[in-house]
Picture 1: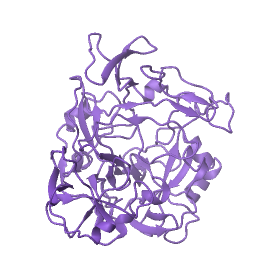
Picture 2: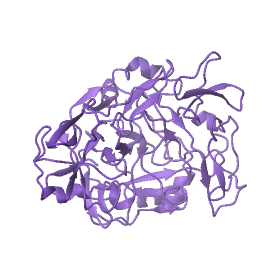
Picture 3: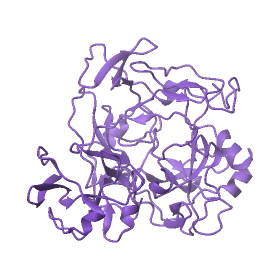
Picture 4: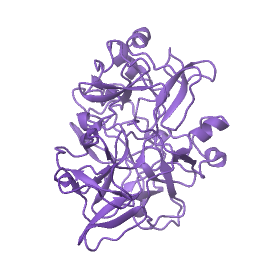
Length: 462
């Protein structure tokens, strides 16, 4: 994910102090340096399609998910996809909102093997669905625009919807461009139903797709196979000869195709037109057996194409080879893990942030005992001079005894990914060990720990 690092960066103009102050949800007080550091995106950012939208919305550029729809205060918009779980259905049906202000008190039994009716933890401080996912309400005179429509929620209030999905913001987002409410780590097995980001369609020509990966926003063809570029090519000129094209298949542009934005078309031979992105000719790799592969980038001089690279990981981190592929590791080579959690209530609330009930994490990492958790799953402590360099990777202060955020200057400074602390595992002894991977329920995707895999094509996403 971080092999080539971030390119020259620029500020998101909208993410100034005024926009941050306009957030209705509680915000994190950042120093000027932190605000600037957390409000940057690559200069080579993903272009968004120009689509009609109500004047209360705009496009916000994010580090991991590219362009997203946001409200007037810069808060990312999300939706709750309707999903069939092992023992029932959760999420919003089309043009309906199932998120209410009722505080759920018991499990729903949507994910086996746990039955419904078990009391949820920390009920005195438990939030409702609308507390964690504030509905994006519409004015009484709001009119549909493009794919944006107006629906009526269970509370009788008008609410915005996009592509027939009711829209929400997240209480986890602190500044414009945050996408902490949804995760790009990917799910597997019998994991919970996650909220999704309302992404703006990427401005790519027909025949191409863009998907979020560990390295960044990866360019694919319409069959989901990776697209590559070659160092030996020149601007809008291919040096890949007949022998070369047996393995590296030029991405041919149709007769009707037209250049657009950063996309150009050149004639590689009489009557044969080839696509180029940012003037680099594009190819697929004939030996790619899987979709979204990065294996072509193992060939010297060849690289996957990204319309926007993910931010660089902290400079003290390393990359290590493992039996599964390349993993992110700390300065000593120990694999880094993220913690994932969503409860089994009807509203499927996340439980992996520092302000969530910590009983879930403590049960997995130490059988409910803080000391065991700190021994077996230690936080990745940040170096004394470490600073947040992006929204994605930040330094946070945690109270190690409670797992909640600590007052400034009174906690342990640790590294966090999308606002959530990261960990190492006691059983990992040498670089590349993955003995903590999938520790928890359903491979760590519902409640547990998963290794930070840099090579998505080896292990189905982070």
